[in-house]
Length: 262
Length: 254
Ligand SMILES: Nc1ncnc2c1ncn2[C@@H]1O[C@H](COP(=O)(O)OP(=O)(O)OP(=O)(O)O)[C@@H](O)[C@H]1O
Ligand SMILES: [Mg+2]
Image 1 (cartoon, helix red, strand yellow):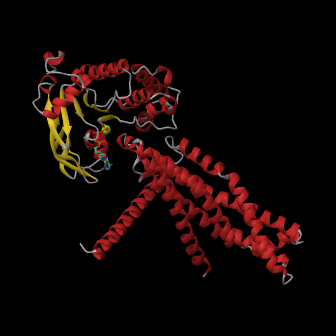
Image 2 (cartoon, protein in one colour; image 1 turned 120 degrees about the vertical axis):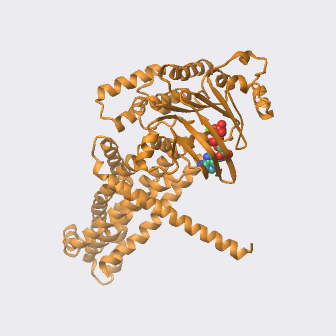
Image 3 (tube, chains in turn orange, purple; image 1 turned 45 degrees about the horizontal axis):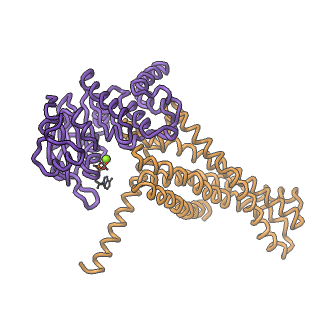
């Protein structure tokens, strides 16, 4: 076969593989969504609560630091610019709006994808290669209810909660920089922030966080289930889950902003 | 009871099963032997539709399982207990919860009854002290036995054992062998056992099948198996110091 035909075949094969995998992931997500009605039932309650706890607590330290510094950087960056026009007071609204709309959900999503998402992919990947998933199937225990659904519930609930936390810390970080570096008092900073940030900004931000929760769960669970080739495969699945989550979060984040603001 | 009809399975570039047909009768202890990579685990996985044949059919109790819907597949799988090669215990649950899992998932049994049933099985497998331990804190042999306890907790009609005694000391291995024989004698359970250990195969099997390069090279009762004229079987027997004139000469299970 000639080179162009072969490479066309390979690309075609990869596209089919991609569509196949996406379909697979979507089916998993739909089924897990259907099972949410059993999230706090007798059989799944324990796992759901565990996952909520793990998701909420695990990354709190990193999120706190990142949120704080994101707010501080935003304040410093825009503050220096605004000072040239003597408009430093506006850092309140600049920080609040960008945190609530964009940076809050985005930063939280990235951190959760890197910490919780990668852990999910590693755990489910290990379970796949050590035949634990097969064992569940033989026992007629649906992995999408038993494993995916509790993680879906945990991530979609905790992502918005953590985003609110990120927003608060970010805005506080901005206030500190404003007060110490730019001579904007905390009161006028807060007044300015609350004056310009709208409820719509908050809702869109939280909606994004919710969507990011779905994305991280779907990508990392799916990568876990697709793991092959033992321990090496687990490493690959973990890395891929983080990269794919990042990419999808970026693209979808952009699309949501477009949808609501243009 | 279990029937393979011209089953072919290609994995990667390798034809792991090549037009394989055999049948396991009710109440048999059917032993599958073969070198590493011969397709023994793959054969077991076909019985519970963890893998689908590329061509051919697998039937359980006269019912082809290739095309079953979810509900029917569940029904078929409920006839089986499976001990996986890696034991496949859930790492975040202790042994007792692992063994109790099928009962908790599929029955409305009160907790006290679940615990007493689980303890009964743990005792049967000499795991009385291990109930509260986690899989990562017990030896490979204990994990195997815990996996076996889980496999039989729902009192299945058929039990599949993927290398039940590998990694176990000889004494415990013989105890597992006895257990397999007992389950057949007392409860009429059908067993399919994958093993490398020919001594145990000859002792417990009602029939022994050897797989080699995707084909069945021998399928006979123990007495017939050791007399096999097939060269692969011969060298397999010799590798474990079993000769035709050995004490298995007079063994017969049928
Ligand atoms: N999911 C899979 N994908 C690709 N190849 C596979 C898969 N499962 C098994 N194989 C291949 O099929 C062949 C048979 O594997 P199988 O696990 O059945 O061997 P086995 O007889 O059980 O060997 P062992 O005694 O080492 O357990 C091997 O070459 C293996 O690499
Ligand atoms: Mg095997």
